[in-house]
Image 1 (cartoon, rainbow over the protein chains, first blue to last red):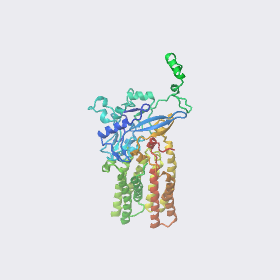
Image 2: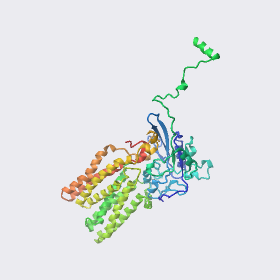
Image 3: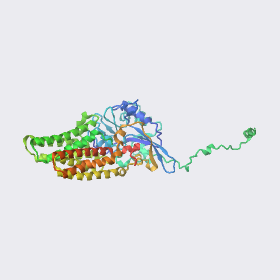
Image 4: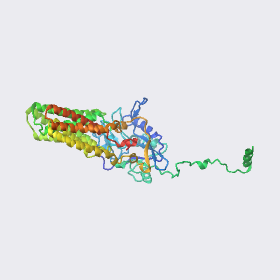
Length: 251
Length: 293
């Protein structure tokens, strides 16, 4: 049913810390591994070992450079996956009802056996979160690892999305944004996270914690912050070492 | 956006077909028997042929029937529903006209309205998308409906009416381009806005998520051929609107001039639809540092 729920009991989603992400792509790989071998059609690759490899991914990391005037450039690694929007345009455009948003936890999913692969939902998404699988002809997207987070066959610590579980830098956090006291709600509030690309009016659930401001280094174009530690003028030594220093210099 | 041939053919031909069906439903031209059969055959070939072409880009066309179910929210579903309704109702009207020489004006009129609604739904599939600011403007449905009226009138042999619609269409086409050219900027279409990093400084893509292509880039970051956009716009205006309009207004009506006008209009229509897709910027390309102003 492509009518969006008025509210959802939970708003499960991710808080992604752009200040911490090192761009290692571990989340991309673990996402692909879990989602190609579990729920739904596998995430296929075409020409995987050839000249032009392409494949389906549910999570991709862009790396941006941000340069303020008269300041050194800053690198921001930017993981991008479905933001499980409250006002998800991908759901309402679906002609078959394959796309839907769950009332109980707000997760946006695709029922692959109803998907005709028209691609309109991918067109409707401003974030590039949906990719049509070239082999299966159905739309693939982040499921928030719905087959992990409620899976009682897994140890409790593994009941979170694969990308969150694997992140070695702890840049990704999973939680309920409907609960104002949840881990993700608190960190989003404290870090002043705003909805991504708000002009699009999608009301995303996921939040990106913005990079913290860098120390204001006055460089005048000449970056020389290590200079104090590289001072080669020796300070005068006393005692035995001082005598040795002088004796050696005299030779 | 990637100008997929199946979608260009679909929107162009089904638009023409439903335009002709709309005029036939209103009793223009007033035909019956064998002549009516030929007219309806052309209309159905275009409308149904276009609809069939649209299924070629589906990943799983065998489930296409499910696409009629979500008319409450989906313009694509609505389009399917209204297209089938229009074909059924005009089919009834056509059968009565061809086989029984009986005119059912109410049925014809309902069929005409349904045909136009179907084209409007097609236009809204594109017009609704906030992610493609160039399409997300009121002139998108106006343009599709006017192409249908102009093409329909032309195929229905309404020389003066077709010429009039073509002149209005020329204005609408120009307006769609003029408004469209500013839409990306108005919709906040910058990489800084899309990433939310703009407040920190000037943003550029340092490294792409992957070294090769992907579905998103192929489908939504089409930039090939934009350099010919200006020439194609002129071709569109000349062939779709001005040349056939002049031909229809200044020469004696006949099958030859009509045929030439149809060919000219078709060339212009396809150029217009190709541009409609090829020029449309999808905001997801901003994350790939495309569409730089």
